[in-house]
Picture 1 (cartoon, helix red, strand yellow):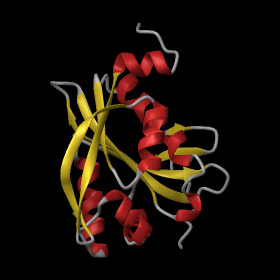
Picture 2: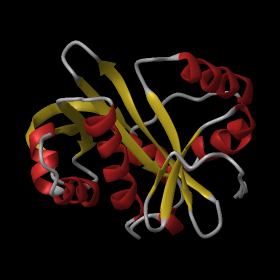
Picture 3: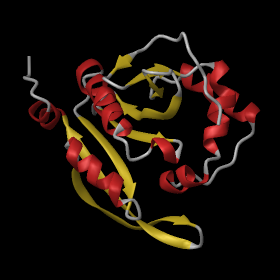
Length: 191
């Protein structure tokens, strides 16, 4: 496991984690995290990539106005423990998808993702003026579905047998949060 100390700007800060931009020098660490087997399963990642492809992906993301890709780092040590993204940002319909991955098992189940998600939700609803943020979670990950519901996401439906992984088809739960639901849940009033 590679630990990267950083002097990068802390874009969004919580009590134990902060979110920061991903940069070219993060390519090796991001590549390593891409191959953590359990994280690949929980995120439904099939694709394999080379370090060069990861470097090009990071460069492309820096030019992509339809997504915000950030790294999740521990405030205490600056260790990068995962990533989080708003993607498919639609400025006409004011909607986006959100995804998150806590890369190593030692950091999972400790509430780091539960702290990181509201930081990016605040950015999406409060800065980008989104109306709707949605996500998908696989039925074999009930812990994540429970956390998303605690955060205020509402189950909308099931995509039946939408993911093929390890010789099996799996259902996908779709969930979303609307701006007014976010503001009510987190005690913010519409200005």
